[in-house]
Each structure stands twice: as structure tokens, then as C-alpha cells.
Length: 169
Length: 156
Image (tube, rainbow over all chains, first blue to last red; front, top):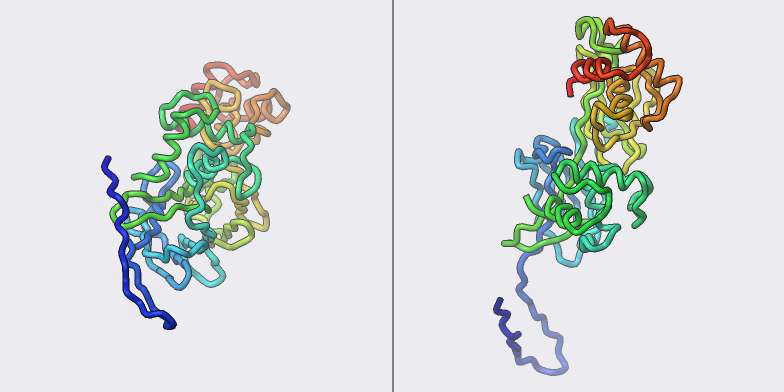
């Protein structure tokens, strides 16, 4: 893999004055795929995604994919889903922490990925790093479904499968 | 929910899975009779997640309610003046195991107690009731014949 050197760029600017410098960056995106627990795409739900000043409200397409351009500096957001809309129905709320998902080598991050995939690890939300009996049960169910060695532990193949199942479709 | 951002051109995404459930409210346990005879139809229900109302409706003609359930949250189903706390089980264990036997009995409406595989009065009584309903020898023993019958009645 070739990684080119960073090229310095200079702009002439007079002293004693304020200058506005615009830096072009690649747009930052948030993608969330809504699925059922078997991995089938879950289209047809109503959703409202709020991140900073951006609000997107629509129906989840048949691909289950919600995609939204967001500011790179936003740290929090909110996703709401509705199976049916109506008076008094608040909907499913999912507070979002943007850019906070940790690497799959972190136990807590693996538990979070299990929960994102609808496996119940018990305990509090957000989860702790403890691999208790309920988490082992969830791991066994995940390993069984993914044809991995069923041992209820966070071995390397399980960590990798949790990452790839969550983060690529 | 901790999520990762990405940039245009990269395939990275986050997954949010909701468990699909179909619960049947019936006048009696098991699958005997017709849907209309078993099902408690056209009754108002409310679903709450962490105290928020997420869905409302009426039970279908067969008494069923279809739910979407996220993991790691408190899910309640309110129906006929009763609040049911839903505990999600990650998978159905093999039908030849005691836990798998309990899960299937409970799934059909027989109260088999906590799904821990341990012998208990509730577990025995549920097995007896199932055997009686299915014209098996009502001895309360989890025999291969009872296991196979439970597998076929439950469906998988």
C-alpha cells in the first residue's frame, strides 16, 4: 500500500486581519441498517434521525438502510422508529453516540455489538465489560447461528464475526 | 447506542437489529381446536420499551400480537389489565435438552417454570398436562415419545 507524503499548502494572508479559510473535506456519513434478528432487512418502519441541525424523517426503505450526511464534529444524536404511528405513540428511541463505537478487541464493544444484533446480554445499558452467564448465553447463540465453535467466549473468530456482521452487509 | 461514522465511498455501516416476536393470547394451552376457538381476539394492547409507548393495537383473530423488540431494554406488554414483562431468550435450545423441553412447553402456554432445566413441580405438571392433551401416557416423564410429540406440535 502506498501512502503519499502530506503536501504543505500555503496561503498568503496579511497580518492584523481576520481571514476565513475553508478546508474541503469528504462528507461524513452515518449509516444504520435496520434488520430483524435473523439478519433480514426491516423496511417499512417510520423513522426520524436527528443529528445536530440535521433532521431526516422518512420510511425505512426495503434495504433497511438509513443513510444521512452529518457534521464530522457532532457527538450525539437520536434515532426514533415507529412500527405504527398514532396519538400517544412515542416510538422506539435510540440515543446515538457518534464515533464512539470501540474496536472489537474491547470486550465491552463486543457486548454492544451483540446487543445491536438483538442478543440479550442482561444487565445495564450501556453494558459493562463483564462476561457473565447471560453474555455467555448470548455468545453461544451468536456462535451457533454463525456456525462458529460454540464456547461462549470472545475468541478471535467470534470478535471478527461480530465486527463483520455489524459493520458490513 | 454507540455508532461509527464513515465517509462517502467507504462501505462501513452500523446494524440495529430488532427481534420479531409473535405472541398468542389463548383461552387454553396447546394447539387444539381452531384459531377462533383458541384466540382471544380484538383486545387492545400496548407495548412499552423503557416506559415509552412504542406501539398500540388490537389482537388479531387468532389472538396474536406481533412485536419488535430491541435487546438490552425493558419491554412490557399491557393487555387485559395485566402488564407482562418480556424476557428475551437468545435461542431455542435443542428439543432433547430439559431447557429446550421447558421452552417449548412454555411457548405452547403450559407453565413449565423458570427455564433452567431443573426438575420442579411446575415442570412436571406442565409435562403431564401436555401428555394429557396429546393422548400420551400421562406419567410426567420426559420420554423420547413426549419429546418428539412436543417437537411436532411446537413446530421446530
